[in-house]
Image (cartoon, rainbow, N blue to C red):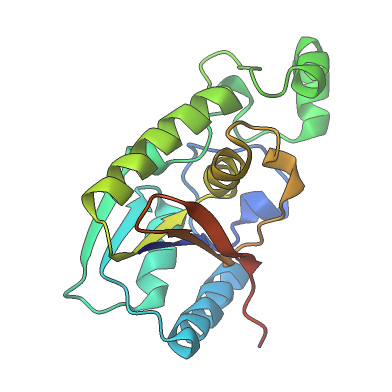
Amino acid sequence: MTEILFIRHGETNYNKKNLYYGHLNPGLNEIGTNQLKNTKKKLEEMNEKIDIVFSSDLKRCRQSLELLELDENIEKYFSEELRELNFGDIEGKSYDKIRKEFPYYIDEMKNNWKYFRTKGGESLDDLQKRIIKKIDEIKEKYQNKKILIVAHAGVIQTVISYYLFNNLDGYWKFKLDNGSITKMVVTDDGFIYFDYINHKPQY
């Protein structure tokens, strides 16, 4: 049995302002730091013995991983492939600003949300293909291990939707809070299920 724990990074000021951002690189704010300190306590309570760690290479995930204070002997890998969706020319903008500056994007954002791609950015379909390729590599290489992946909401939502629906249909059906834990299990015969989704520390 292979177990993969996904942890969403802590809050940033860009989250707080409801900005679209993926490859921009802000650090955690004070709330985000406290969220991950609580996630650390929750992991310890759950007694999850991590064998190997993968993380997005962006600052908010690196800082989140540091706050978990895992054993320094556990191997840790940072990957561009685990980054959030690249929003291209709407990075760092609010919905209202996008509506004013890029009014021609709005209909497609709503009606073609799976394949809509901004200039210089990715579609959710692109993101899902990128992420699933990486997750499949990880779970094949580290069978029967307990793997921790520190990543972004969009990354984890594409994973859940893919392994439950084999597409993006479930993408908006899950809420993933900052600092939350989601556990995916791969059985010895390759069956995949989710033990829990959006497990939030309460302190």
